[in-house]
Image (tube, rainbow, N blue to C red; front, side):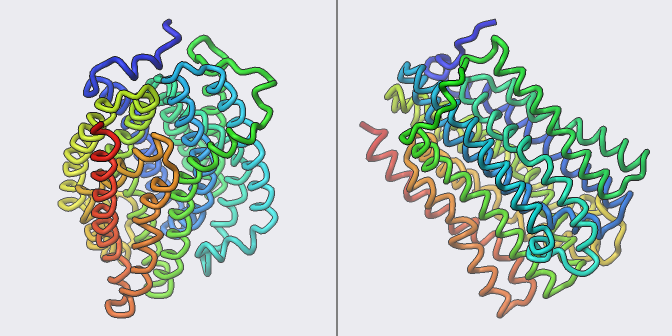
Amino acid sequence: MQTNTSSNLGTESISKLLIKQAVPASIGILVMSLNILVDTIFVGQWIGSTAIAAINVVLPVSFFIAALGMSIGIGGSSIISRALGANNKEKALKTFGNQVALTLLFTVSFAASGLYFVDQLIPAFGGKGAIFDPAKVYYEIILYGVPVLGFVMMGNSVIRAEGQPKFAMYAMLIPSVGNLVLDYIFIGVLDKGMSGAAWATTGSYIVSFLFILWYFLSKNSELKINVSHFKLHKKIVAEIGSLGFVTLARQAVVSVTYLLVNNALFDYGGETSVTAYAIVGRMSMFALFPVFGITQGFIPIAGYNFGSEQYNRVKEVIFVAIKYATILATMVFVILMVFPEVITKLFTTDLDVLKVTPNNMRWTFAAIPILSLQLIGAAYFQAVGKALPALLLTLTRQAIFFIPLMYILPMYFGEFGIWVAFPISDILSTLVTAFFLRREVNLKLNQ
């Protein structure tokens, strides 16, 4: 098998290359999204609607752990892509070794802290009333698998930076399929309830970790590191941190948003509203899976060609990625607008939840056809190593616009104000990103 595939990022046609990179990423995200959906269906049908809300309470923790791994992975992968594009193999190896060391350090520390403060964190995340006990059971088991999850998310980004999208897809498919199988065994057959759901998730990521470890030890990977590469280098760590902080900030804001929305909806509508948001939240990754897939495929192509100073190719991949992502996002948008009642019935038979969720789902996803420009625009700045604009544009959607709107609008519109804050923030953040991306193209890429 050909081992040096990263050079293809600078030579193949952009459309063909983007499809080759994005399709496996999209398939992986789709299967992972369907896994989350089916997992929630299993929990809702076999354990109950309160269990759905309990898992949603723990989602901020899972998102933050994934954020740690993804931030180190994507931050380092931007360096690796540009280093390979500039034919600097040693820098790529040092970067990967530092990624491994940082992932181990941060995930183990976070897991230990999270387990120590469990009784304080669960209520803070919205795990109140009847939700507390099942949420605590799920939370504690999920924390045991935190280091493994971190390595999976980090390794997946590095595999994609090497120009190996199919292996990155396999790494995402394994935990998705594994979780469904283990769900059936632990919940359906062994009747382990919430602990079964948690162990199914943790066990599936362990299997994925073993696959990723095999990949880097096999001849498929260009990055053959040794012990010396694990030594932290201040300059590399700083660059990983500055670029990775963009992803960390984005995912951390997602976690904070879940926390704030869970608490706000509990105050306005109780457990029913929290459950409705849990269902909508499960659909969010599915709704955006084409955009996320294209964005992940876009990043190594943009980074490699920017590193080799092929600016026309960078400009081309920006426009092609936005076009493809917008078309696919619009197709998903139509499905969500037409069939929200059918989708909701897959998760629960609770009449109160069935009554409120469909309309809230429509409002939440009302602006997703235009959101591809915002996500890909922010990803461009991260791919080319411009951490500050990447960070600011990443934060516009939820931190700068959504969270303030979530507090202001309910003063006038009650609970409806929380739901309508989603599309308004999507529109505003897209307009801001479009302005800065257009300026960047004119100033830098039209040389």
